[in-house]
Image 1 (cartoon, helix red, strand yellow):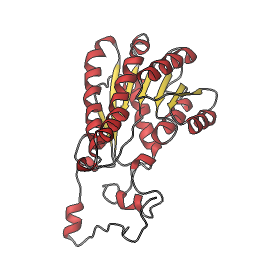
Image 2 (cartoon, one colour):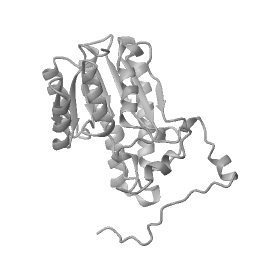
Image 3 (cartoon, rainbow, N blue to C red):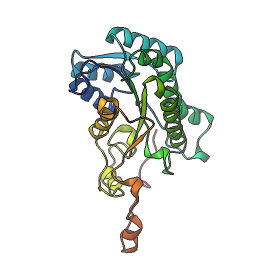
Image 4 (cartoon, rainbow, N blue to C red):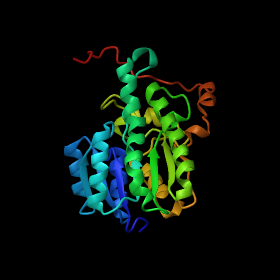
Length: 271
């Protein structure tokens, strides 16, 4: 098992990629602290994961909450070897539609949270060096223009902060890397709830002709957190089904393919 004897904090781990990573880390021998604001789902994931996992309520956009949760996690786990910054949210609004509150909400959830958690965890991680690691979950949105404007800007910031931490703390034995997923079948992956065919339509834009499952991203996070990546730092591991490699969409359109958008014109507006 690749994480035997290791202790990890995973933020936003009540569902999606974070929950998948928590289960995988525990299966690989780690003790895991699940941080989230969703008490019900977070507790459920911890219970399902077993005795090696615990749930801590934490708003990762609030410095006091983060400091208290990281301190408690390190105490209850006995140490802290790995931090996975996974928590994020998105308003999914275009720039002309959002106000300052929308902008700040996305920046706080996706970028400020990474700063706050890294700052709180650094003393504990450095005490376990060499061998400690930070893995930040970013997005292909931080690498190219793909809408979700404020979220994309925040994820680009995560990529930059990752490099800064890697360079600054590498001499002390701390590794810091980022995973950039493409579309993942999670609630933050987009789409109207229950919209028929959404994932298939999005998946058709990818060279692999599908979206990712949370477990596939979790395996990339595991690699970067483990000693298998002992000489990897400051890297961006893109797990995107080939999206950033290029697209055959234009060739398909030239051959007569059509992009069909769902017709919501007859739907009643939300209450």
